[in-house]
Length: 445
Image 1 (cartoon, rainbow, N blue to C red):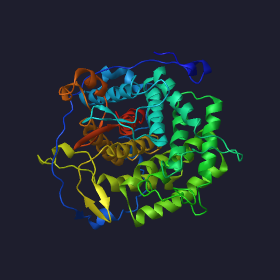
Image 2 (cartoon, rainbow, N blue to C red):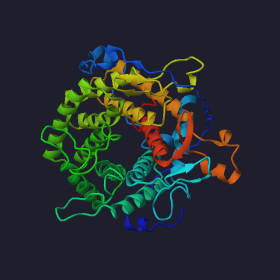
Image 3 (tube, rainbow, N blue to C red):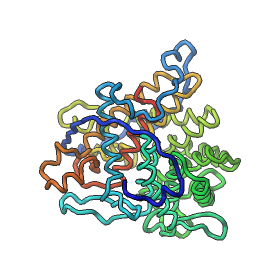
Image 4 (cartoon, one colour):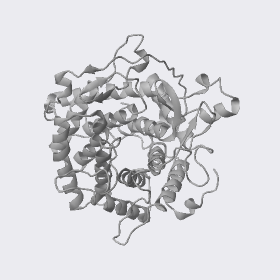
């Protein structure tokens, strides 16, 4: 491992290693179907009943027994499908931490243009923070110090671009017209909370970032996705509130505070109402993460009901067709626009939906009376999503047409969509997070 000054800072400890297996993904392309109107029962989510079952039925899914701290370390004990998922996970993690992808200055290359055979230059603070979040979670999953060290390098380089102001809060200096500051602050804070053993100084920096997020909360529970006077972030409107609440939920787990619990309570009321009125797939993943975590901390049944309501609705949208034209799409998700399902080729956004299902599984496994039927349904949707994502992964078998030196630089990364496209580091990061959460949530069992 190349020398890293950050090791000397004592940010975290070294731990074990994991196993390696094989997987040969395939890809396919089919033309998109015309839009169709969502069925009423799909468009309008039904209130979820209490996510518990009678005690007799609950025996089908007992509370999880303690499991290995690093679940990838005993891959040989898994079944064939799970071993394939282990290999896809480790290959993606190794790509993110590879020399040439993660550079000596602590930054990731933003992506690769396959047609031009060179790195892309569409970088941003948020994409860098996403890569750090993925490697931090990978360190927790594998126990490998090198991933934690490289995640910390990126985090420290980004903190230099998010100084603390005179009010004691940190905010990214990049204006939201370049990269949304609310999303960037939330993601950087979560990356710090995900580090296996972050120093007290780093945790304080995360709390200062959450202080900035606090200023974007309204009295009725809404999260302002952009600061006053800045342009609206249309693309991130549905993602950013959940990202913000997820960061606050992680913050509350680390440093409990009354204002954080109240922010989650108000956010729950606001966004559950919004979801029922205008459900959007993009709203689900991070809201699921936020309120699954909030439930595990508070045992508030309403939070669990919201998680189940969102996941029940999202599961209905997943591509399931075994038709030859749609075969490569199975497990992915369409888009929803103006109340209509648009049957577009699924993209790497499927990783976010998979992450949401994994967090729902994590929540259910830790209930006193787990809802076994829901767990099975979410686990199936999660597994299918990961199988689809595996078809986007570049491996030796599907990169033989590239020059040898360039081929080795690609192996392990994920394409952006079922129709191919380029490699974006944040898309690979999201996919690595989704695969990792499958294991961390205990959904491999």
